[in-house]
Image 1 (cartoon, helix red, strand yellow):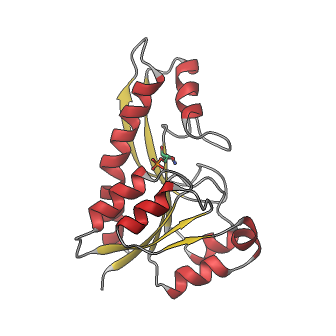
Image 2 (cartoon, helix red, strand yellow):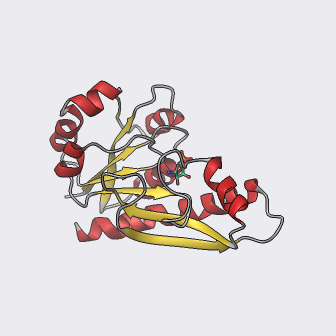
Length: 190
Ligand code: GRF
């Protein structure tokens, strides 16, 4: 039986795209569902392009009901992948999928993580701090933003004068390369 992946994303979904591409012809796993809190998120179009069903929810459904957990259970989801999903994961979802929810963050956690640290803000913080290296972190999700056990970190050097765009580009390249592979490795252990 193929393992079943659900992706949560709030925005563009370029990582979701790479994951859907990676598993499109896989014998091991498939992306079974894409979920978003944002009805205008481009990730929904991307899911459509792969003929993968999607589900849009609001705060009430996510935080005040068990509907999302029920949906994921009904679809026999094995792994929950956050890919640019901006909301904190509620307790019922964490308990329903213990050690089965992972996230990707565009910095070398614990540096430059936490509430409000997303998108360009992360790279700006790296430049402001004068860090000489930067990178990405893939980690298990717990009840706090960007804090669970680290699964993988990819790093690159930051040279004096590097632009925010360069940092962003380098990070994104690492994300797109490694997130699908890390997911594939995890799937094998489930
Ligand atoms: C990525 O940088 C990821 O690390 C962070 O959100 C961003 C999502 O980008 N969690 P995209 O929507 O996959 O392009």
